[in-house]
Length: 329
Ligand SMILES: Cc1cc2nc3c(=O)[nH]c(=O)nc-3n(C[C@H](O)[C@H](O)[C@H](O)COP(=O)(O)O)c2cc1C
Image (cartoon, rainbow, N blue to C red; front, side, top):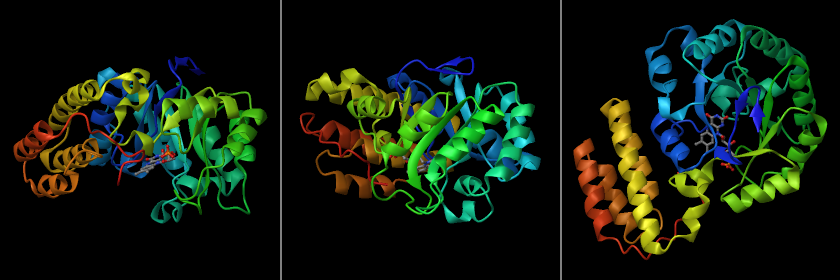
């Protein structure tokens, strides 16, 4: 798939997830086969105020990730335009606008999925962003605000008219948050309505699900969110064919790549949370995982965390690895 001039090589890619899809995790997902990665949402107001955490922590990416999409979140052109330009100047290959976040503290200030409510106002913001950016510009939307306002098709057409290069659809409404099943039919409706490439998202947990979504909806690309938590190998078709010992070895390799990336690229306070969260997911489905998690979350430094994990990991039976389909948050 081509997003503007950026080639997306492969069907499935990691979805943006706040607190999860950061540079370290995106890099391992990419190395496992994610066709492209998108940053978690980056607050335009934080960029505008030159907030250090927003600018140099959340917006950070690693050279191995290129091409990279950086996702911005905001409610007005005054902050979104300079924010997106700043991200472009940092080397982003694509700017993605978050028009799907359902969280109340975000939507009450007009950000995320609230941008789908007033289409005319949002069109002006998109126009201003399009005019200011020289790189591909994409949006990620839901099916609508609620069941009474299912306007993904209207929003997608408006976006195509103002020159947006691609659209991702997560077909749940803002009211549904993350509950219930996503309705893929809404993705098909958007595919039929626009000529720009569409990415489908929602309840994809494997590459076979991704192929099914492509066949059923006509999308050229699929995003995997929760199904990739603690499972970056979901993007590697060959993983499922490995023996239990082969899977254990593959997972060990990924963990040994991921943990140093966290230690190198985060301040220890933030990194420790990241490390424990991901290690807890990586252990999903293994023996004695509950006791392990208690010990893991009690560790107070990188070294202690790594020691707890290494002891546990060396003691598990490699032939038992029933990872749940969706990691426990
Ligand atoms: C913990 C969490 C954080 C998320 N953060 C973002 C985000 O920053 N930006 C965004 O566009 N979507 C975000 N999402 C939504 C996902 O990108 C995706 O649209 C949604 O989870 C549906 O896909 P899935 O069924 O594969 O998980 C988040 C989802 C979760 C579970």
